[in-house]
Every structure is written in C-alpha cells, then in structure tokens.
Length: 209
Image (cartoon, rainbow, N blue to C red; front, side, top):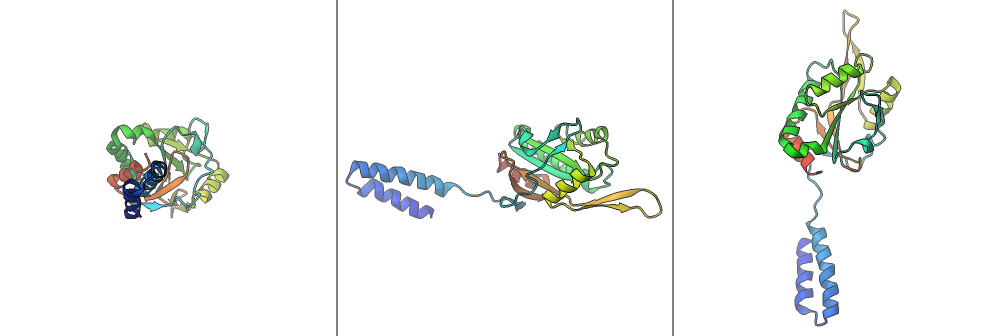
C-alpha cells in the first residue's frame, strides 16, 4: 500500500496540469501517506484490543475510594491479580514490574500499576498497601468484597480459587497471573505473562505512551 501511495503522490506532483487539481491530489496523497505510515503496535504479549476485558472495573483502593480505569491519571494502567501471602509468583511478577518502571525512566510516571487481591479475607487494606509499595511506592492495591471480586475476575476472565493446606486450617490461593495493560482511554490492549522479563514489558508499554 505504501508504494501505491508514493506512486500516486508522484503522479499528482508531476503530471497534473491544473493547479487546483494538483493541490487537491497532493493534499489527498499526503493524507494517504500518513495513513500508510501508521502501523498497529506489534506487542510481545497477546493483543487484546478487540476484547472488553476488565473495562467495568470498579473496586475500592486501600483508602476506601472506589476506582475505575477512568479514574487513573495515567496514559497506561497495568492490572495484576495476586495476594500478599503468595509465595513466589506474585512477588516475582511485581518485582519485575518495578524493574519495568525503572527501565521506563521518566515515562514511568505515566504508568499506574494496580494489584487486585484475590484473598480479601486475609489481605487487609493496611497489609495490601504496605505489600505493594514495598516493590514501588507508586503501586496501588484494590480490594473488594467476595461478590465484587467474583464479578471483577469474571470481567477479566481470571481464574482464582482457595486451596486448603493439607493437615492444617490454612490455605493458599490458586490464580491466573498475567498483566493486563490498558491505554489512556481505559481500553484493554495487551495481556503479558506474569513471568515476562522487564524489557519485554517495557517494550509493550512504550508503544502505548
């Protein structure tokens, strides 16, 4: 398509004998060339632009304020599901996301990272706030009731369940572990595995900034 645009532009400039027609054609071709140069982002994660994952997010933060995607003053919002007593997956993923913000340098202030707890029974607001900010003080946490969590997880197509610990009254949580990345309009754009390296996460986020 780009070569066709260039050919039409060349013809418009060199062969049209009438200045008005030439002006119209040149203007049209400039628009076409601009369209030809625009390319859809090539994400390293999975492109979810044609979904509505999580778009109706509405959960309280640790201060009790209900947050939606439109409330975040950011160009990119990253949502992750986890819990504070997660032994390895959650801390590893959040540490990698903190490293991602370091790689983004000044652009990191244009990114909001939010963890939604899948264990509201044990994850109190104070505990959640301390947990996520231990990785980066710009991270926030969201905590809903059991029914709010169920609705939210369904909206994101996220699996979670309580898994009893054999031989005790304790339990752990089994859950999906991916980063959901939204653009400035609150639209889902890319799904990144929770074990993705920081440079790949940063690459995908940069394309939305």
